[in-house]
Length: 298
Image 1: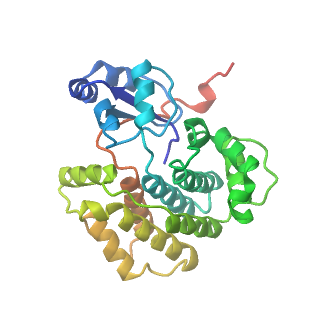
Image 2: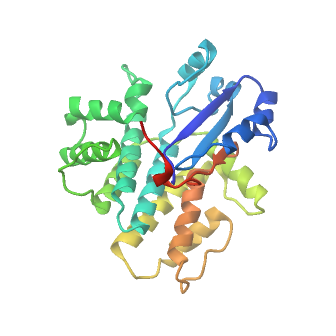
Image 3: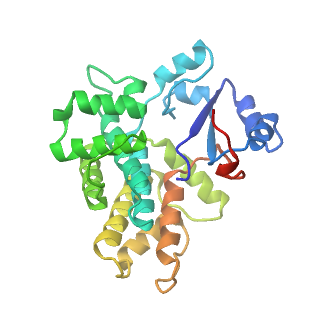
């Protein structure tokens, strides 16, 4: 959650995908030479997987040819994966004493999860409406009655925060965010064959950890993330319930730190955040190597 910047590189063939992901590839070397203020994450996707509906690209086309544009038309956005990321943002916000930027991110992702559930109707949303902050803001201002008033007001506030504009509204309440995500969770449909579960299994095997049934991954993640957030918000200072701990250990495939350790809660939240963003073809270019003060802006 250090970065909101993800790039998706669509490759025409499997060989090109493997070449890009190679540790000594020219693409990786160029990326690692960049001086960034924050981490940049690039996800490499074989175009055939999008065409067959096995994965998706949650973004806007920045460059490429007509083939990439047509592939984006095949891309379907599973809201369940986005909801996992919303819970991950909420958990990080709780651990950082209610960071408003992270709470705004949780609300925005929750709102997009709800929007994704509406893209299969008679008037499907375009990517610009679905995946950009300004598009989201235009939607909520033009159709405020599509949601309960309390949700509409909180979502608009979160989007304004995300855009960096002045905001005179009250601060976002993490308990209200949790209630909103619970509402969204109750109305979405979980994918029958979630692609995220494949990445989960592969990474667990790579790390020598056990894993639960892939078909249970997303639903169990959301349930446990909600329970963990609820415990942290309503039972501050009280040990996390043993049933929640056992569920997280099953999901993570490793024992959680003992309750007495000072970093106990932080370690568990870090594990849950990592699982929300699980992807086997993700390249992270670390940022922050130059001081902000050393940069000039025109």
